[in-house]
Image (cartoon, rainbow, N blue to C red; front, side):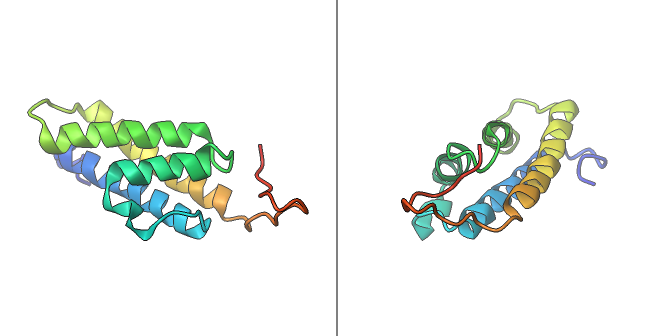
Length: 124
């Protein structure tokens, strides 16, 4: 709705925050060993998401890249005099939808049981 009404910056902001919240929920759901304060900064949440969910193979690398790029675009939209194009905003919106759906599909499965060695059994 924001993009349709011409609020490109607002559309980027809301789409990014949907991804941010999904990343935070994914970390909580996965019981990743992160401090509760990790969500206080964007960079620490994005780093934890990458470390605990992407680098382990639990989620696709593309999700980490999309979250980083959406964060960059959101910073421009919120804090810069530079203009974000409607095409870029549309990309962030589409990324957010795909990001959330992939997190739901991939993490909607039960957490894998540890192997006998005690190490997590991550796919990939």
